[in-house]
Length: 162
Ligand SMILES: [Zn+2]
Image 1: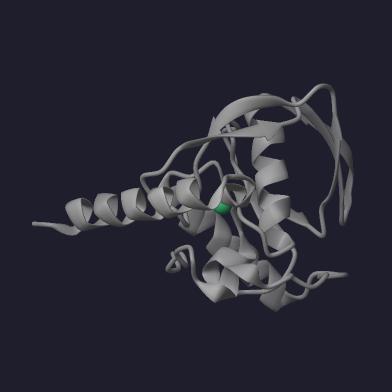
Image 2 (image 1 turned 30 degrees about the horizontal axis):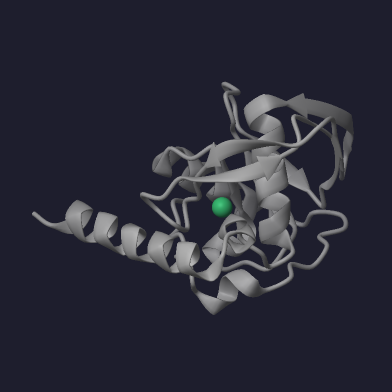
């Protein structure tokens, strides 16, 4: 079911999400909601905390045809970080340049360790920050964060205007 995505600076987004362990039926229902919500919003990835659930569950879409769910992902980055443009479903209408590693290895519940590169690697680094209660804009200076917030609010006002 498509859920409402919490918008930054909702304090809920600062929550450190807890480990899932072995996913229950309720966790799998959250996972399905994340897929539905991420696809509906046209996002590349979504974390459970963005729909108000403080559990370490991530939906990864990237450029993949089918979204995948990762429980308790542990992300190890590789390579030389570089600046890439990035957005977030919790900060609609905003894109900022942030440092990301080009490749990651991801261990998660019930899956072999997988390597991702490019957009998928970027999304996973972004989602891991959500799981730890952070957001990509935190690396920017305060005035740039305030400007991003203003731009996002303006974007939403325009979008919701009939
Ligand atoms: Zn995000």
